[in-house]
Length: 330
Image (cartoon, rainbow, N blue to C red; front, side, top):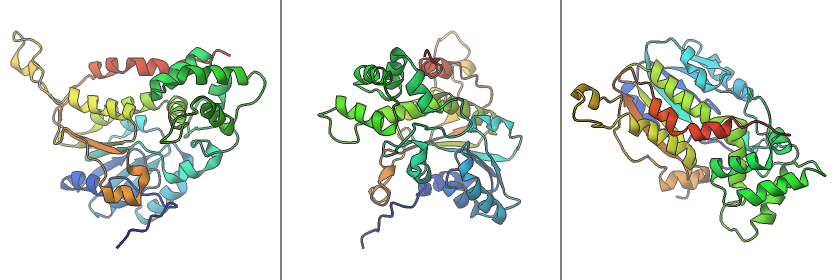
């Protein structure tokens, strides 16, 4: 029997795989750092011994959260906050921290938000609790800084000519979503495959929402509040996110013999235990019923010790945070 593909419904990605990871830890509190349409939270709450604390910076999801709260008053809490602020949680019975870094269908399909290259009108891209919009970036950012954003946040091959054309055209006209798409298409004329604007929109979303800092701080704070034995699970959707998460787990789960003269307890210090070195990816069936899941990767690790300072992690991706902190010049 063929599956019916419903493009109007949001599907939580890799839900069954995530449940299999956290189910041995049932009987405690789980933190859903990216509540969105509530798919993960709802599934976790199906087990009566579980509690969920959910975060989302997007105020538009409050109605979904309130509906879930009405049915689980004692087992569910929601914070309209960035997930980097999870260090405010003082619960000692946390069993797992979950991140789904993708955008929900509701967010992408809201064309007024300008998250998609299918949108019309003013460039926005704000997910909530932002300092500026994409319109500000396109209007006020120098050509050099636009190039850096496109180059480092999406590895856009045509970053230089695209940034140059944006600066040229904005002198005489207001650049809205459809205009940005036209600029990209005029430069990437012979490109085929996925939409030509995908990388440019990705880079701008990352910059506008400070997604690099948010992810790095969220991972560090998740480790800090998680008791030994708890799990951190992360679903990523593009290579930059996955590179950060992969390094975070791998760097602090492998034995490193820096020097034979150092005490053994120092050279073999580990803070995570990895059950799988390779990420879990969606099955062909899931991709068929939910094509947007095709780029998803799920990585997870269990905390085995306290006291990590994450210095190497912070230094490894400092160059990305520096790009994220570029200022407006115009």
